[in-house]
Amino acid sequence: MAAAPLITARGLVKRFGDFAAVAGIDVEVESGESFGFLGPNGAGKSSTMRMIGCVSPPTSGELRIFGLDPVTDGREIRARLGVVPQQDQLDAELTVEENLVVYGRYFDIPRAECRRRAAELLDFVQLTDRAGSKVDPLSGGMKRRVTIARSLINEPSLLLLDEPTTGLDPQARHVLWDRLYRLKQRGVTLVLTTHYMDEAEQLCDRLVVMDGGRIVAEGSPRSLIQQHSTREVLELRYAPGTNEERAHAIADIGDRQEVLPDRVLVYTHDGEAALHEVHERDAAPISSLVRRSSLEDVFLRLTGRTLVD
Ligand SMILES: Nc1ncnc2c1ncn2[C@@H]1O[C@H](COP(=O)(O)OP(=O)(O)OP(=O)(O)O)[C@@H](O)[C@H]1O
Ligand SMILES: [Mg+2]
Image (cartoon, rainbow, N blue to C red; front, side):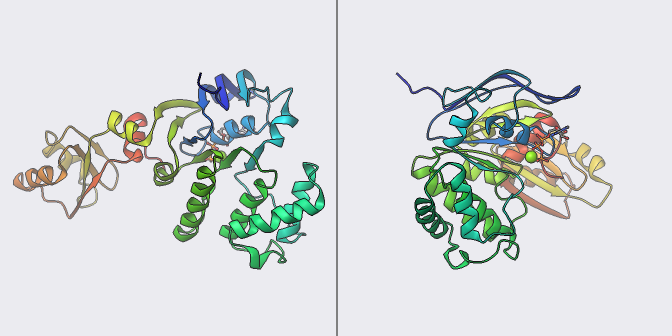
């Protein structure tokens, strides 16, 4: 028999007054999986994460974590959870190490054991040399790594990460991705939100695409792309203000088009062949690019909008 899912949500709703931030979602996350919520600002990602993290009670619907009910078993669930909130909530008065130790004390972990784990975790996030520094002067990427180290102090089997890398430079993001990948290899289940499609593609075995409080698609990154997009995309740039007209002239090339303010996208199995046809029509662009379809294309297809604008 398959193990019970770690997280089950059915018809899960979160309302603020009349407004449904989460408008009835169904989700199952299996143990050992890396699961993502991908969506633009306001999609309801954090509201969902806060319900899973037992800090915000569901308005209606069913939610089970480790088979337990967050409303009545919050404490027991939280003891087995690691939480990385969207905004770092580190104590600026304390050193990096003290932040971890104090957090560990909330879980009644003995102080000596907290210190031992803190040292190990700071090594894991490559911040051993900053253990004694105050938090404030650290860079954004370092603070994020401290928060991740702190979230691991109770040795959680499920780690919730709300936009772990938003605002970080590419190098800092890659360091974090590597650490998260190692955690996954150790068997930690990861649930993360992001509005970066490349992050979702890198980190998630499976994901849901959220928009306006609802799930609009679900699957592995690869299956979502296969289902909702073509193999390749030809991106064409024309002189400002001429995209509509140009797109019209090449409308029958490829399977489908999207006309964005700055580009025309031609969805096709073979981008180079499509580009050749475009040139034959005397519709040569200022510049062009052939690339593989991505989750961004899936989102655009499903919602008519781009993920990050
Ligand atoms: N405490 C609250 N009171 C009222 N409205 C809220 C509250 N928290 C969230 N909302 C609203 O619910 C919607 C979803 O917010 P949420 O923070 O879940 O989105 P998100 O997907 O995490 O967005 P982002 O990518 O910007 O973090 C938004 O319209 C937001 O304004
Ligand atoms: Mg959010």
